[in-house]
Length: 94
Image 1 (cartoon, one colour):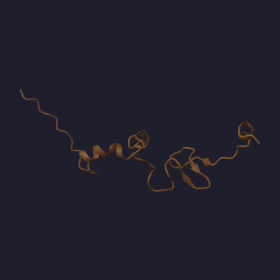
Image 2 (cartoon, helix red, strand yellow):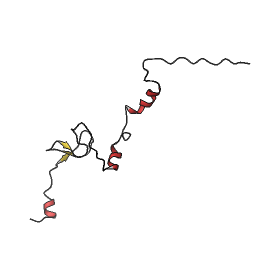
Image 3 (cartoon, one colour):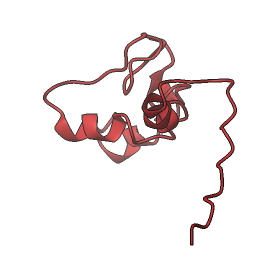
Image 4 (cartoon, one colour):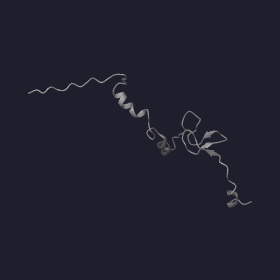
């Protein structure tokens, strides 16, 4: 048996499949953990030694469905259920 071409022909099983959380093909089927994001762990996998890796996964790289309108709501004091007062037209002074 050689180490090269003939051995590569036998590789037809997959150790990793798609991950639910990050969507990458990094979920190890036997270990039941994702090599990319550490799913099903509660905290996402990231390290201080990987600056570019953190940049790809940080806040602002996704849709930010909740964070997008936070600054506007904070500016208005998180008010809810109120109706804006009608603006009074300025009377023309001659």
